[in-house]
Each structure stands twice: as structure tokens, then as C-alpha cells.
Length: 131
Image (cartoon, helix red, strand yellow):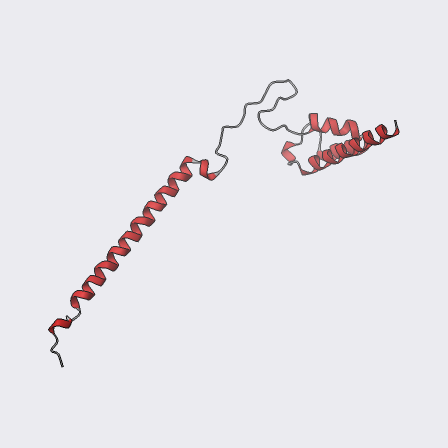
């Protein structure tokens, strides 16, 4: 029986610590029902009840989870999770790559023309008399 009471005490302490961390790190706009300082005092003085109350009532739930009425809030519009899932980002990469390729090709063509002109302007070795 002593082990069970120690285990329940530890669970209560861990729950209170998580509730305090959650309460103190929550944005001011996301704390509901009471001011943050009152929530901290409730969690400290009534660890089990205060922690459970904080998680059920005190903090704003993420979008799409059921509220106190049991109805789910509408989820936020789906956004790509990473840049490589975003079609606009991929299109901008494709456009930038295309521009860079065109610029590189233009520079190569200019270099080729310049080298061809240098070769044309250079005196030919066949025209020189042998010594």
C-alpha cells in the first residue's frame, strides 16, 4: 500500500510540474478563464485538482480538438509542412534555376565568341617564313 501511495504522489508531482511549465510557457492570449498568476497559485496550492483544471479549462486547445461542448473546432486550412511540399516554392526554384541556366549559357556563348575572334586575329603559323 505504501508503494501505491508513493507512486500516486509522484504522479501528482509530475502532473503539477507539467501543468506549471505549460501555464508559464503559454502565450498570454491562450490562457483562458483566469489570469496566469491565479492559475499558477491554483496549481501550486491544489496540485492534483489545479493541474487537471489547467489542462481542461485554463489553456486554449489546439485547433481541431474537441472543446468543452464536445464539438470540434474547425481545423486551420491545410498548409504545406515543408518547403519541398509547397508548389509556389517549387515553382520559384524552377524559375530561378531556369534564369541561372540562361545566364550561364549566355556567358559561355560570349566566351566562345571571344575565343573564336582571338583565334581569327592571331597570325597563322603557316604564313611565316622558315628560318
